[in-house]
Image (cartoon, rainbow, N blue to C red; front, top):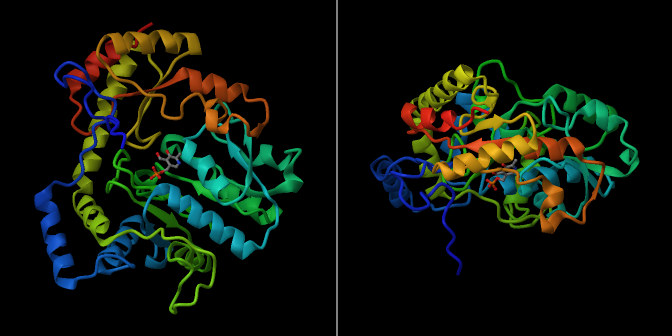
Amino acid sequence: MLNPRPVGAPSSDVTERIPVAWPALPRTDLLVPYLRQIDEARIYTNHGPLVDRFETRLAERLGFRKREVIACSTGTMALVGAIRAARNLSGHRGRLCLLPAYTFVATAGAALSCGYDCHLVDIDRRTWAIEPAALRQHPRLSEVGLVLPVAPYGRMIDLQGWQDFHDETGIPVVIDAAACLDRLMEPGISLPKTIPLAVSLHATKSFGCGEGGLVLSRDTTLLEETYKVFNNGFLGSRDAQTVGLNGKMSEYTAAVALAELDGFDEKSAQWSRVAAAYATAGNAIGARLWTAPETSGCYALIEASSPPQAAMIGARLITAGVDIRNWYGAGLSEHPAYAQLSRDPLSVCADVAGSVIGLPCFTDLTKADIGRIVAMLAV
Ligand SMILES: Cc1ncc(COP(=O)(O)O)c(C=O)c1O
């Protein structure tokens, strides 16, 4: 079995190189009380007491109702569950999925695995997302059975605009809000009326539990259908009521997620300190940096004025021992697995993907490290 270097693991000598991500999840001592509860209950999965408690406490933290949150095994599975549930309930027969070209590959993988044909749409220069007004005019709209808008890097998108699009067209919409959990914890953000959000709890996200995901929606019928999808189609009996999969979160993962929630105020403060240090250093040299609260806390991005300038900055950073990452690659159409997908002209995606570079971002990144990184960004 291949054993690639995990994301964020220092490539050679951590005292020399600054990794792009270096996740820190709750340490063993903080997990032990929860693990003992698993020992006592002898319930290891199938929506056990810890998953239930995690959903309840997270809903409280978000200001949502308990029934508006379902935990599952990964962010990709959250997409699959929400897509299948939305399709089942809408009865929409359209086989085409419109999605942005600028996203992580999992967005396309989820739609294709649900049987859709995917068509890549260009993003808006300002939001880096697809926009409902533009899609209303899309020439292939009559074939469309699913739209998958993405909130890139946790940048908030027009949730109400997508709800209106769904209400007017009847087309199922599922929001890929993979990196949005910390943004959703900010006061004043509410879920759309019916369309669901899929969230990732991957270790590299601001709030992580190793591997995990969430589906969030105010539509409790849709969430019940999603629950069935994650539970092999079962709900209250051994008769599968819908075609399902095993997308459940285990009790062990819920233990990590609960401990992460226990310490999240402190972690959130650490993300904010890193973002503020980047903003101060970036302002001093006039660099266009994207950090929290514009993005999720786990991202620090530099937007260069052009792809060639970004390539120059990227080369300089790597030479200076600073690891970088283009989190979405050069866009979906540039990945061999997705190169055959039909697409609109993707000039904005190419420009944004070429100009935006992911900089190191982790909770214990020091001001000195940030100073060293930002010093490399001046043109
Ligand atoms: C935009 C986007 N969608 C989906 C996913 C998939 O989430 P997961 O890795 O938890 O399956 C990610 C993960 O990084 C993502 O960034």
